[in-house]
Image: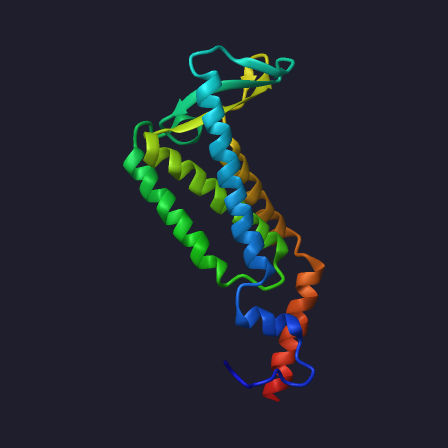
Length: 191
C-alpha cells in the first residue's frame, strides 16, 4: 500500500485511469460477455426449434427465422476452412484485447465498438470450435433480394465496425476536449 497522495489539483479521472480497471473496462468486458451470452442462447434456440423446418416468418416476408449451418465466411466464401477460421478468430480476439490497453480513457464509442466486436468474435469462435460451423438464423430481405442469413454475433461485429468508422470520421467532442486538456497538462508539467 502506498502512502503517496495524488498531487494537489490532480484530476480524479486520471488517477483512477492509471490505477486500475474503471468503468470503461467493465463496459468493454460486460458488453462483450452480454453479446456472447445472447448470441449463444439464440443459436441454441435456433438449433432446437428451427433445425429441419422451413423458414418461419416474423415480420411479413421481410424478416424470417431460417436455420443455416455456415461452414464458411460471409457470402459463402471459403467453405469448410474451420481451422483457418479458428486461427483468424483467435488472432482477432488477441488484437482487440491488446489494442484495448491503448484506448483513450474517455473513448466511450471506442470501448463500445471493441466490446461489440470482441463479443461477436468470441461467439462465432465458440461455434467453430464446438461444431465446426456457425449457426445463422436471421433471414432479411424481400422477394428475390435477400441478405445472407446472419446471427447476433455477426450483427455485433458489424455494428462495432460501424461505430469505429463513425469515431474515425466524427470525433466525439468530449474526447477531443479531454485530449486537448491532457496535452496541455503534460506540456505544462514539462515546461
